Length: 461
Image (cartoon, rainbow, N blue to C red; front, side, top):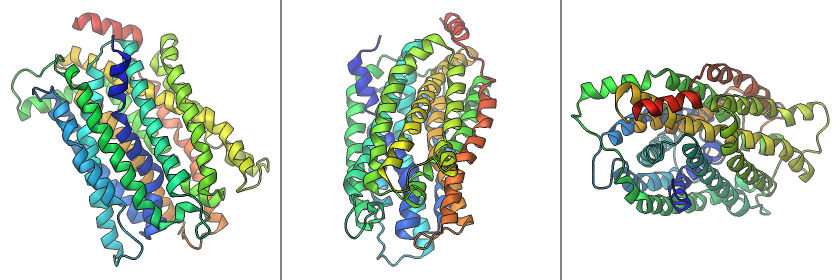
């Protein structure tokens, strides 16, 4: 059994990714398109290019860490060095100023390069970190608990990052009532996040390194042929394919909705940053609810059914506030009453969303056991690389398509129309619901139940 101290030390490692994911999902497109003035279509394309690079580097990192044997184990050498590109890329990403003499091409290249560097740094840490969590315990329920801890810490980190933004750096001023439009607030916001990333990455790596020494080691030769053969076995696993494509479709839907959140809150609901920050306690409470409920749900139901219920609830609740607005049943725009009205739906929606993420994360360890039965190899690295890539897809695909939506409707940050704001809210709400249908269909074919997993463990001994 894993101690609570280890669970905490391990889960602190998810803080860096929580900060990065929150920023990339909610703030990055807004910063470049609304503060710096980069065409939103180009901004979305920059994210998409980084995503294409991730599609290569994430599985490569998983494969490399699977095959690494060192005094620090298979994963920790990469975890220790990751803070350098991660933090530097993140800081430089938010360095541009409105007064800089940069063309659209210059801004596009700047955003692309430092987005790639930041995400490469995160790949160095996050893929080995996830794989380490998957191999440190084989127990079906304990694995779920550990991933619940990890996900909870990541969400709390993301919420804390958002609170620093809305509550501190983007606070309303006489010049900028909507403080998120203050160009001078963004660089200090990024530097603060980078410092927290460095501290948490190094702390997690140091405090968990002893546990890594006693885990399984890679044996046998390492050749391109063997790597490709084992990749084919791992990535061709039926359970994994269902998991991958289900998450792919889910990332498109939820990522698009998340990326448009700040735009919709600012331009459709007319909220100031000081009002938006009141949503953050709702996210925090939802995280606690999900953390407490998920292990109990896994004891009662197979993970497949929990995932299906969670996706369904998120799909049903995503357009709720928008629908009530069209029925004339919402409080006045820009009011605190509207904040609290939306919060009632948000609490339930986010609880189910986080529960679904926690359960899906724990599925990968189960799939790794099935792959071991088929191939005789522990390949958590390559499989958890898929999870890390999925989280990047959430921000990457969402940002790409949100950028294309903004470009398609000719959204102008300084001269937008009510119709344009309405279109963004429509895409964030009803369109998201429609996009949730496909992942529900895909996950309905997932067949790796608790009973089947126990049989797999008996067979691999």
